[in-house]
Image (cartoon, rainbow, N blue to C red):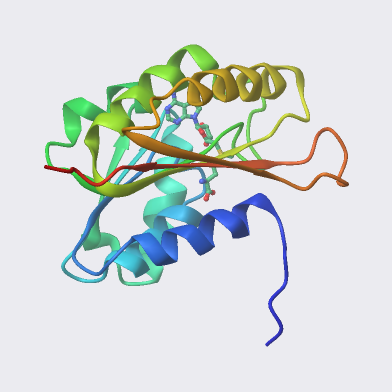
Length: 192
Ligand SMILES: C[S@@+](CC[C@H](N)C(=O)[O-])C[C@H]1O[C@@H](n2cnc3c(N)ncnc32)[C@H](O)[C@@H]1O
């Protein structure tokens, strides 16, 4: 099949497929309807672990059902808890952390991610990453809070020390100002 450049979420999936190995532990910081959680359960395999967070019980229920139907629920730990608390639930280093910012598709648009809590969660994610692990964030600047969050995220990630992290920002330049964007951070290998 011909390779096709598609949305930020496909760019994120490409990176995750390369970075996550069977047996790894990973984090889905925004569970939503569980599409990313299911994808990660597939990548980590039977011996791996996916920690997933969302503030809405509706998201947890929807994700639980999706994982049950695919027979992979035992690979996941689902928390109805803000991602800013992830360090309280995850003790081991992880090979990937995924954020899909914004609101639950088909749900309440007033329950959206906000930079203040996203920043705390991103800081926790960066410390939980193992060397060569990746943080992948899809951001949606097409609404006021999403635009504010994307701008603050860009400033925050731009200031990360290059000796410790590589930071990549991908967006489709001709898709209009509200198009989704993909940010990837890789923790550097420990040297010496
Ligand atoms: C765009 S949706 C995620 C979609 C999801 N990854 C999927 O595959 O279906 C964003 C989710 O972030 C959740 N959210 C908002 N604030 C949060 C927080 N502080 N911690 C964790 N999740 C949060 C929302 O409830 C919403 O379900």
